[in-house]
Picture (cartoon, rainbow, N blue to C red):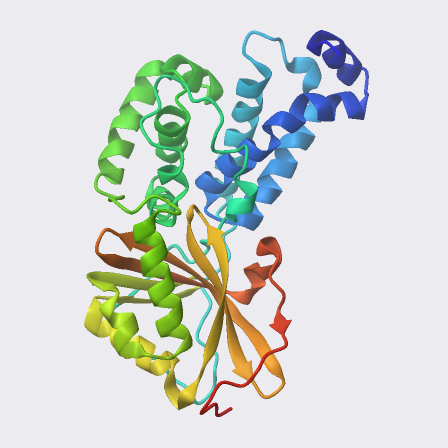
Length: 336
Protein backbone atom coordinates (compact mmCIF):
# COMPACT_ATOMS: atom_id res chain seq x y z
CA UNK A 1 0.00 0.00 0.00
CA UNK A 2 1.38 3.49 -0.84
CA UNK A 3 2.70 5.46 2.13
CA UNK A 4 0.25 8.27 1.45
CA UNK A 5 -2.63 5.84 1.90
CA UNK A 6 -1.07 4.43 5.08
CA UNK A 7 -0.64 7.94 6.45
CA UNK A 8 -4.25 8.84 5.70
CA UNK A 9 -5.48 5.68 7.40
CA UNK A 10 -3.18 6.18 10.40
CA UNK A 11 -4.40 9.76 10.84
CA UNK A 12 -7.93 8.41 10.77
CA UNK A 13 -7.09 6.16 13.74
CA UNK A 14 -5.99 2.94 12.03
CA UNK A 15 -3.46 1.37 14.41
CA UNK A 16 -2.30 -1.21 11.89
CA UNK A 17 -1.47 1.51 9.37
CA UNK A 18 0.46 3.41 12.05
CA UNK A 19 2.48 0.30 12.91
CA UNK A 20 3.21 -0.31 9.23
CA UNK A 21 4.60 3.22 8.98
CA UNK A 22 6.67 3.19 12.15
CA UNK A 23 7.79 -0.43 12.54
CA UNK A 24 10.70 -0.11 10.05
CA UNK A 25 12.20 2.53 12.37
CA UNK A 26 11.47 0.96 15.75
CA UNK A 27 14.72 -0.96 16.21
CA UNK A 28 17.00 1.93 15.25
CA UNK A 29 15.02 4.27 17.51
CA UNK A 30 15.51 1.87 20.41
CA UNK A 31 19.27 1.87 19.83
CA UNK A 32 19.19 5.68 19.64
CA UNK A 33 17.42 5.85 23.01
CA UNK A 34 19.91 3.35 24.43
CA UNK A 35 22.88 5.46 23.34
CA UNK A 36 21.32 8.51 24.97
CA UNK A 37 20.28 6.84 28.22
CA UNK A 38 22.83 4.02 28.65
CA UNK A 39 20.16 1.68 29.99
CA UNK A 40 18.26 -0.98 28.04
CA UNK A 41 15.18 -0.67 30.23
CA UNK A 42 15.18 3.13 30.13
CA UNK A 43 15.56 2.98 26.35
CA UNK A 44 12.58 0.66 26.07
CA UNK A 45 10.50 3.03 28.19
CA UNK A 46 11.58 6.02 26.07
CA UNK A 47 10.74 4.13 22.88
CA UNK A 48 7.24 3.36 24.15
CA UNK A 49 6.77 7.03 25.08
CA UNK A 50 7.99 8.01 21.61
CA UNK A 51 5.54 5.77 19.81
CA UNK A 52 2.65 6.92 22.00
CA UNK A 53 3.53 10.57 21.38
CA UNK A 54 3.83 9.93 17.63
CA UNK A 55 0.45 8.20 17.55
CA UNK A 56 -1.22 11.00 19.45
CA UNK A 57 0.54 13.74 17.47
CA UNK A 58 0.37 12.32 13.97
CA UNK A 59 -1.85 15.19 12.81
CA UNK A 60 1.04 17.55 13.53
CA UNK A 61 3.38 15.71 11.15
CA UNK A 62 3.45 18.12 8.20
CA UNK A 63 5.72 16.12 5.89
CA UNK A 64 8.38 18.83 5.58
CA UNK A 65 10.89 16.35 7.05
CA UNK A 66 10.78 12.60 6.59
CA UNK A 67 8.76 10.46 8.99
CA UNK A 68 12.06 8.96 10.22
CA UNK A 69 13.46 12.40 11.06
CA UNK A 70 10.21 13.34 12.79
CA UNK A 71 10.35 10.18 14.93
CA UNK A 72 13.98 10.91 15.83
CA UNK A 73 12.93 14.38 16.95
CA UNK A 74 10.31 12.91 19.28
CA UNK A 75 12.63 10.19 20.59
CA UNK A 76 15.49 12.60 21.24
CA UNK A 77 13.31 14.99 23.19
CA UNK A 78 11.75 12.16 25.21
CA UNK A 79 15.26 11.04 26.14
CA UNK A 80 16.27 14.59 27.05
CA UNK A 81 13.21 14.81 29.30
CA UNK A 82 14.28 11.57 30.99
CA UNK A 83 17.84 12.83 31.47
CA UNK A 84 16.68 16.13 32.95
CA UNK A 85 14.27 14.44 35.34
CA UNK A 86 17.26 12.69 36.98
CA UNK A 87 15.22 9.54 37.50
CA UNK A 88 18.32 7.41 37.54
CA UNK A 89 18.46 4.22 39.53
CA UNK A 90 20.76 4.69 42.54
CA UNK A 91 24.05 2.87 42.83
CA UNK A 92 23.76 -0.48 44.58
CA UNK A 93 25.76 -1.09 47.74
CA UNK A 94 27.67 -4.30 48.42
CA UNK A 95 25.24 -6.37 50.49
CA UNK A 96 26.81 -9.80 51.08
CA UNK A 97 27.19 -10.01 54.84
CA UNK A 98 30.50 -11.32 56.13
CA UNK A 99 32.22 -11.09 52.73
CA UNK A 100 34.13 -7.98 51.76
CA UNK A 101 35.60 -7.42 48.29
CA UNK A 102 39.11 -6.00 47.86
CA UNK A 103 39.49 -2.23 48.17
CA UNK A 104 38.53 -0.75 44.79
CA UNK A 105 40.74 1.68 42.94
CA UNK A 106 37.75 3.93 42.36
CA UNK A 107 33.98 4.30 42.39
CA UNK A 108 32.12 4.57 39.10
CA UNK A 109 29.50 7.20 38.35
CA UNK A 110 27.64 5.50 35.48
CA UNK A 111 26.02 2.84 37.66
CA UNK A 112 22.82 2.70 35.53
CA UNK A 113 24.72 1.25 32.55
CA UNK A 114 23.17 -1.87 31.03
CA UNK A 115 24.26 -4.07 28.10
CA UNK A 116 22.49 -4.20 24.74
CA UNK A 117 22.04 -7.63 23.10
CA UNK A 118 23.61 -8.02 19.66
CA UNK A 119 20.57 -10.06 18.65
CA UNK A 120 18.54 -6.83 18.70
CA UNK A 121 21.07 -4.90 16.62
CA UNK A 122 20.07 -6.61 13.37
CA UNK A 123 18.63 -3.95 11.14
CA UNK A 124 19.45 -1.20 13.64
CA UNK A 125 23.14 -0.52 13.01
CA UNK A 126 23.05 -1.15 9.27
CA UNK A 127 20.67 1.69 8.40
CA UNK A 128 21.95 4.24 5.87
CA UNK A 129 23.74 7.06 7.66
CA UNK A 130 23.73 10.72 6.76
CA UNK A 131 26.78 12.37 5.19
CA UNK A 132 27.86 13.94 8.51
CA UNK A 133 28.44 10.60 10.32
CA UNK A 134 31.94 10.20 11.77
CA UNK A 135 31.69 6.94 13.72
CA UNK A 136 31.33 3.37 12.57
CA UNK A 137 28.02 1.97 13.82
CA UNK A 138 29.74 -0.95 15.55
CA UNK A 139 32.04 1.44 17.39
CA UNK A 140 29.17 3.70 18.47
CA UNK A 141 27.37 0.89 20.31
CA UNK A 142 30.42 -0.30 22.29
CA UNK A 143 30.25 -0.10 26.07
CA UNK A 144 33.19 2.32 26.18
CA UNK A 145 31.46 4.69 23.78
CA UNK A 146 28.05 4.49 25.47
CA UNK A 147 29.65 5.00 28.89
CA UNK A 148 31.53 8.07 27.68
CA UNK A 149 28.33 9.51 26.22
CA UNK A 150 26.70 9.41 29.66
CA UNK A 151 29.26 11.88 31.00
CA UNK A 152 28.29 14.58 28.49
CA UNK A 153 25.67 17.22 29.34
CA UNK A 154 22.29 16.20 27.85
CA UNK A 155 22.20 18.71 24.99
CA UNK A 156 25.79 17.92 23.93
CA UNK A 157 24.99 14.22 24.14
CA UNK A 158 21.99 14.58 21.83
CA UNK A 159 23.86 16.75 19.31
CA UNK A 160 26.86 14.42 19.10
CA UNK A 161 24.69 11.36 18.49
CA UNK A 162 22.49 13.05 15.91
CA UNK A 163 25.41 14.64 14.05
CA UNK A 164 28.41 12.30 14.40
CA UNK A 165 26.71 8.92 14.89
CA UNK A 166 23.62 9.27 12.69
CA UNK A 167 24.86 11.93 10.30
CA UNK A 168 21.99 14.40 10.38
CA UNK A 169 22.78 17.86 9.02
CA UNK A 170 23.23 20.73 11.48
CA UNK A 171 20.02 22.43 10.32
CA UNK A 172 18.06 19.19 10.84
CA UNK A 173 19.41 18.84 14.38
CA UNK A 174 18.66 22.49 15.11
CA UNK A 175 15.05 21.91 14.10
CA UNK A 176 14.80 18.73 16.16
CA UNK A 177 16.04 20.54 19.26
CA UNK A 178 14.26 23.86 18.63
CA UNK A 179 17.54 25.76 18.60
CA UNK A 180 19.88 27.48 16.15
CA UNK A 181 22.50 26.03 13.84
CA UNK A 182 25.13 28.07 15.68
CA UNK A 183 24.07 26.52 18.99
CA UNK A 184 24.28 23.03 17.47
CA UNK A 185 27.79 23.69 16.14
CA UNK A 186 28.94 25.00 19.52
CA UNK A 187 27.49 22.03 21.41
CA UNK A 188 29.07 19.62 18.94
CA UNK A 189 32.50 21.18 19.34
CA UNK A 190 32.34 20.78 23.13
CA UNK A 191 30.96 17.25 22.88
CA UNK A 192 33.73 16.14 20.53
CA UNK A 193 36.30 17.49 22.96
CA UNK A 194 34.68 15.46 25.75
CA UNK A 195 34.74 12.27 23.68
CA UNK A 196 38.33 12.57 22.44
CA UNK A 197 40.31 9.38 22.92
CA UNK A 198 37.37 7.30 24.16
CA UNK A 199 37.63 4.33 21.81
CA UNK A 200 40.63 2.44 20.52
CA UNK A 201 41.51 -0.32 18.12
CA UNK A 202 40.04 -3.71 18.82
CA UNK A 203 39.80 -6.84 16.69
CA UNK A 204 36.71 -6.91 14.44
CA UNK A 205 33.89 -9.13 15.74
CA UNK A 206 34.43 -12.74 14.83
CA UNK A 207 37.97 -12.41 13.48
CA UNK A 208 40.69 -14.93 14.32
CA UNK A 209 42.38 -12.68 16.90
CA UNK A 210 39.14 -12.23 18.84
CA UNK A 211 38.31 -15.93 18.61
CA UNK A 212 41.71 -16.92 19.98
CA UNK A 213 41.55 -14.53 22.95
CA UNK A 214 37.97 -15.51 23.76
CA UNK A 215 38.75 -19.24 23.66
CA UNK A 216 41.72 -18.79 26.00
CA UNK A 217 39.65 -16.64 28.35
CA UNK A 218 36.84 -19.20 28.58
CA UNK A 219 39.24 -22.06 29.24
CA UNK A 220 41.15 -20.13 31.91
CA UNK A 221 38.04 -18.75 33.62
CA UNK A 222 36.22 -22.09 33.77
CA UNK A 223 39.38 -23.70 35.17
CA UNK A 224 39.71 -20.93 37.78
CA UNK A 225 43.26 -20.45 36.49
CA UNK A 226 43.92 -16.90 37.67
CA UNK A 227 47.42 -16.76 36.20
CA UNK A 228 46.09 -17.74 32.78
CA UNK A 229 43.32 -15.14 32.97
CA UNK A 230 45.76 -12.42 34.06
CA UNK A 231 48.10 -13.31 31.19
CA UNK A 232 45.34 -12.26 28.77
CA UNK A 233 44.89 -8.79 30.32
CA UNK A 234 46.44 -5.54 29.19
CA UNK A 235 48.45 -3.57 31.73
CA UNK A 236 45.68 -0.95 32.00
CA UNK A 237 42.84 -3.48 32.26
CA UNK A 238 39.68 -2.19 33.93
CA UNK A 239 36.82 -3.99 35.71
CA UNK A 240 33.50 -2.34 36.49
CA UNK A 241 30.26 -3.89 37.72
CA UNK A 242 27.18 -1.64 37.43
CA UNK A 243 24.96 -1.07 39.37
CA UNK A 244 27.72 -1.60 41.97
CA UNK A 245 30.05 1.40 41.78
CA UNK A 246 33.19 -0.67 42.50
CA UNK A 247 35.95 -0.34 39.91
CA UNK A 248 39.34 -2.03 39.65
CA UNK A 249 41.98 -0.57 37.34
CA UNK A 250 45.36 -2.05 36.46
CA UNK A 251 46.59 -5.62 36.38
CA UNK A 252 47.57 -5.80 40.07
CA UNK A 253 44.19 -4.55 41.28
CA UNK A 254 42.27 -6.81 38.90
CA UNK A 255 44.37 -9.80 39.99
CA UNK A 256 43.34 -9.20 43.61
CA UNK A 257 39.71 -9.05 42.57
CA UNK A 258 39.96 -12.28 40.58
CA UNK A 259 41.56 -14.02 43.58
CA UNK A 260 38.58 -12.86 45.64
CA UNK A 261 36.14 -14.01 42.94
CA UNK A 262 37.61 -17.51 42.74
CA UNK A 263 38.07 -17.83 46.52
CA UNK A 264 36.76 -20.87 48.37
CA UNK A 265 37.25 -22.97 45.22
CA UNK A 266 34.39 -21.28 43.38
CA UNK A 267 33.99 -22.64 39.86
CA UNK A 268 32.03 -21.18 36.96
CA UNK A 269 30.66 -22.09 33.53
CA UNK A 270 30.47 -19.50 30.74
CA UNK A 271 27.64 -19.49 28.21
CA UNK A 272 28.51 -17.47 25.06
CA UNK A 273 26.49 -14.38 24.20
CA UNK A 274 27.21 -11.05 22.54
CA UNK A 275 26.48 -7.54 23.78
CA UNK A 276 27.28 -4.11 22.33
CA UNK A 277 29.16 -5.71 19.47
CA UNK A 278 31.50 -7.41 21.96
CA UNK A 279 32.01 -10.93 23.33
CA UNK A 280 29.82 -11.62 26.35
CA UNK A 281 29.11 -14.57 28.60
CA UNK A 282 26.39 -15.66 30.93
CA UNK A 283 28.36 -16.60 34.06
CA UNK A 284 27.00 -19.56 36.00
CA UNK A 285 28.25 -20.69 39.41
CA UNK A 286 28.42 -24.37 40.28
CA UNK A 287 26.17 -25.30 43.20
CA UNK A 288 25.24 -28.70 44.69
CA UNK A 289 22.00 -28.67 42.64
CA UNK A 290 23.27 -27.34 39.31
CA UNK A 291 24.33 -24.05 37.79
CA UNK A 292 23.07 -20.76 39.18
CA UNK A 293 23.23 -17.62 37.04
CA UNK A 294 25.68 -15.18 38.62
CA UNK A 295 25.75 -12.41 36.02
CA UNK A 296 26.81 -11.36 32.55
CA UNK A 297 30.40 -10.52 31.60
CA UNK A 298 31.12 -8.30 28.60
CA UNK A 299 34.77 -8.11 27.58
CA UNK A 300 36.45 -5.36 25.59
CA UNK A 301 39.37 -6.46 23.44
CA UNK A 302 42.51 -4.67 22.36
CA UNK A 303 45.04 -5.93 19.84
CA UNK A 304 47.16 -7.35 22.65
CA UNK A 305 44.54 -8.75 25.00
CA UNK A 306 41.54 -7.90 27.15
CA UNK A 307 41.30 -4.20 27.97
CA UNK A 308 38.13 -4.23 30.08
CA UNK A 309 35.61 -6.53 31.71
CA UNK A 310 32.17 -5.25 32.66
CA UNK A 311 30.13 -7.44 35.00
CA UNK A 312 26.34 -7.03 35.06
CA UNK A 313 23.84 -8.64 37.41
CA UNK A 314 21.77 -11.63 36.34
CA UNK A 315 18.72 -9.36 36.09
CA UNK A 316 19.81 -8.74 32.46
CA UNK A 317 19.54 -12.45 31.59
CA UNK A 318 16.00 -12.28 30.12
CA UNK A 319 16.95 -9.79 27.38
CA UNK A 320 19.72 -12.20 26.31
CA UNK A 321 17.49 -15.29 26.45
CA UNK A 322 19.61 -16.75 29.25
CA UNK A 323 17.96 -18.88 31.96
CA UNK A 324 18.62 -18.12 35.61
CA UNK A 325 19.63 -21.71 36.32
CA UNK A 326 20.87 -24.76 34.44
CA UNK A 327 21.52 -28.39 35.27
CA UNK A 328 25.21 -29.02 35.68
CA UNK A 329 27.91 -31.54 36.54
CA UNK A 330 30.20 -30.82 39.49
CA UNK A 331 33.77 -30.07 38.36
CA UNK A 332 36.67 -31.90 40.03
CA UNK A 333 37.61 -30.40 43.39
CA UNK A 334 34.29 -28.53 43.68
CA UNK A 335 33.41 -27.23 47.14
CA UNK A 336 30.19 -25.36 47.87
